[in-house]
Amino acid sequence: MIDTRQQLYCDEVMKFRKVLNLTSIKDPVLFFQTFIEPSVALSKWIDDKDIVLDIGSGMGVPGIPLLIHNENIKGILVERRKKRTEFIRHVIRKLKLNADAYDADINDLDSLNATVCVARAVSEVRLLLKMCDKHIVDGGRAVLPVPDEAVLPDVDGWCLEEDYRPKDMQRVACYVKGGNEDVGGVSRET
Image 1 (cartoon, one colour):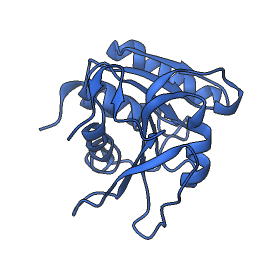
Image 2 (cartoon, helix red, strand yellow):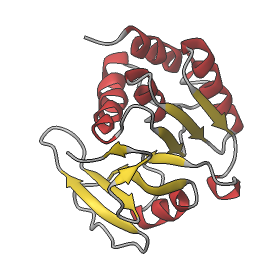
Image 3 (cartoon, helix red, strand yellow):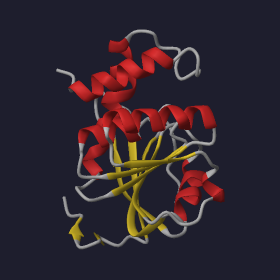
């Protein structure tokens, strides 16, 4: 069963999808399966009180579904395209989410001090980790959906914590900045 606020988000995307070129998907059920379910699956690596940075947020994915799923996290959604950022701000206000949205290139922003970085289809893993680097605290995580065939790189300053390959979902790589096991007093043990 779909959460009421996830449904409201889905409705907003469907309402604005064509005019803002958000998605070519017209079917709300397919949208839910394609974008919301995989986004919520990333919550496996996100704890209460985390500050989640969504790089290249587009229409708010994966940030908005994660914020709806866990009201105890704060979101920072970064999208270069102003019209899409305005859409994200509209959804944040409408759903009363604990988040800020920036219409900027992530590389042009001062440090955002987030504890988790997420992104969906923005770039290659090495480049994404470079984009995350100054915005994530030591011991923070980068949780990145990756293609099944991708070779996960070794990246200076980051340690691959988990290469998660679920049966019916997209593969996810979880990197830890500096490899520290403890962030903000919250144990990261599984």
